[in-house]
Structures are given as structure tokens and as C-alpha cells.
Length: 478
Image 1 (cartoon, helix red, strand yellow):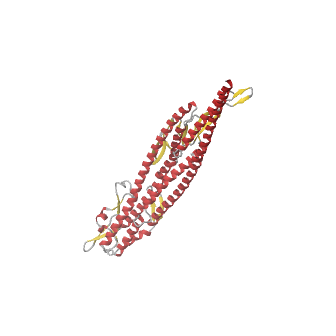
Image 2: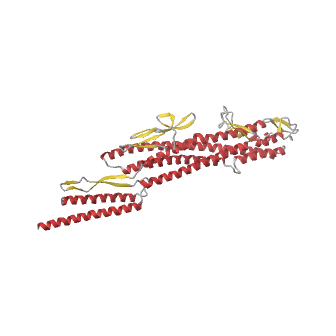
Image 3: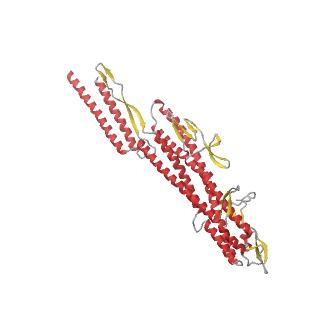
């Protein structure tokens, strides 16, 4: 083995140690960078020289750098983050819905309902009192306003959820565009055997976000590209991509692939949580609130229309009309059922409390307040609550029905929030396991740095030794 061979061997050792130090320094520098994957230098033994005396090593070759990444841990993290994201979105929406009901509270619907029936009780005790009639008028207006408030805010929340769903669909489409382009660049950069570590890290960040949005599954390709599946349908395959769309099917918002608009996706992640809220949670509460409103309106109006009002001296009776009406802009004329957003005092009641009936039609004078007493007793009278299409919901008192709606919403909110907390904890655990493999430990990198520094020094010492050997040969020739 020649002197030059020894120098080449030592030089290869110095170069390998230098590259290892550079990679280690980059790891340390990016220890706090989101999405950065720890890198390592891959080395292999050079083809040895063969002599009659045997085989002699020729040094070390730097093959390149690789990322410390485990695709199975990535998949586990993405599944967990999808569940956590979907549950978190739904829990947040349900929490807002629970807050809209504002129960129990002094200024909620239940309190307004109690005040309304208490006002009828007072009118039954003082049927000729103008102030008692005014109190019924004001209590009825306050009850209608409370129901309107919840109905309006629920409609606003529904609009917000649709806006967020559309924005999330747009974000998904932006992500798939970026991932497809990154696939193209990674394949091109790695076609000569090198690695595109930085670009792969950037792509993994986008894949993580895409999984949180949709519950997407990632398929690794041999050429360095990836495929992305959502509900068994391909969104990204190499440089090809498909877009998602928010489509209304059968009156419900569905997420579909844009080129398959009639095939709803069983989507997960944030989009799945938004869709469940949009087509399930909000319509359920809206149907229950509208049923409650119809129960109040129909129950009160049916009795009120059977009564009479009194005016003049001597008093003269007149048939009473409805107590409640509905806003034609919010409850169309072709829909005779009342809605929570449309309840109003009847125009005659709103104009004058004297239009309020306290007496039945058979009354002989304004002192007969048996109708007002019947109206006050509606608070405990079972009512058949039905949906807009006539489906029965329950038969119970108005107060019990509304309290049950509020209680069921609170229980559902707590259940979904608890599950979201569990999923968030599982996501944290999955990320911890992933970081144990791909994350940077500064302490470990410093240990490696010392090792590579010593390797570099040893290789340099070898060159110094070979130089001394060369000098010895030169001295002999002299």
C-alpha cells in the first residue's frame, strides 16, 4: 500500500468527519424549527485494495444524508390529530350552542317563560287591572324576544360554520396543490441519488395539516412522491391532484370530490367536525327550538282566541284574536307553523294591552278571569311538540321540554368535549413518540459532535504520521 493511498484514506476520514460535523451543526441549529427532522450522514466503506498479502481498506465514502423518520409513527400521529381536530371543532361549536340557550339564568328563555305565566296568574287575580294587562303584554314580548334571540344566533352560528367549512375546503385544495408540486420537485431532485430532506420536511408539515383537516391517509411511493387518500378516493397521486367541494345534497351540506359531486365523502378531521355540526347538531337544536316556539304559540293562541275583550261603559265584549303572530319574512305564509326566529306579538296585542283577553266567551262581564287562569296553567299542561314536518318529539309541559333541550345539549357538549380531550392527549403521546425518533436532542447531538471532532482529529493525526513517514523515506535517500 503506497504513501498516497494512506493519504487518501486519511483524507476520506477527515471529509467524512467534516460532513458529519456539518450535519450535526445543522441539527442543533434547527432544534426548535417546526417540522424539522433530525438528519444523519450515511457512510460506507470504499472498495478495498487487493494485494497478494490480502485486502486493505481504502477509506470511507459519504453516501449522503437521510432523515430519521418513521412512516408508521407519522401515520399514527395523523390519525390521532384528525380525531382530535374533528372533536375539538365540534366541541367548540356545541359549547357555543349551549351558551346560546343560557340556561339556567335569570335572563334566559326559562325565566322569561315563568315570568309570562306569572303575569297571566296576576291578571287572573286582577282581571280589570290595566297594569296587569300591560305586564302580560311586556312579558309576552320579552318571551318572544328571547326565543328570537336564540333562533337568530343559532342561524348566525350555522352561517359561520358554513363559512368555516368553505374556507377549510379551500385550504385543503391549496394543500393538495402544494403537495403535488412538492412531489414533482422531490422526484426531480432525488433522481440522481441525492436526498431532498428540507423539501420532504416541508411536505410532511403540509401532510400533517391535511390529515388534521380531512383524516387523509398517506401512501409513500418508491420514487419519493406520495399519494393522499380521503375516504378511499385519491386526492393526490404524484403530480396529479383532485379538488374537494362543499355541495348541498338533499338540503344538507356534504363534502365531495369536485369531479364526483353526487358522492358524499365520509370525511374526518376538522371538516368532519364542521359537517357534523352543520348537518346534525345545529339542525337538531333548531328543530327543537322551533317545536318549542310552535308549542308556545299554538297553546297560547288556541286559548286566547276562545276569549273575549271588554270595552266601554257598560262593558261590551268582542272576540279576541291571536296573542302571538309570526314575521312573514321569517315564517312564510305557505308555512303555517311558527319558527323561533319569527315569533312576534300579534299586532293588536302589541298596539294595546286592552286587546288581551282574560275572560272566556261565555263570560257575563270583565270580572270573569277564568281564561287568564287557564292560560297561566299552561305552564304545567302537557303539550305535543312536533317538528316542522309533523314528526312528534315529545309530549310534556313547555318548561320541561325546554329544560330537557338545554340539559341534553349540555350533556352532549360535555361528552364530545371529554372525547376531544382524550383525543388531544393521544395526539400529544403520538407526537412525543414521533419526536423521539425524528426530533433533535441537543444533548445527543453534542455527544455526536465530540465523537466526530475526535474522528477528524484522528484522521488529521494520520496525515501527520504519513507525512513523517514520507520524510523518513526522503532522509534515507539522502
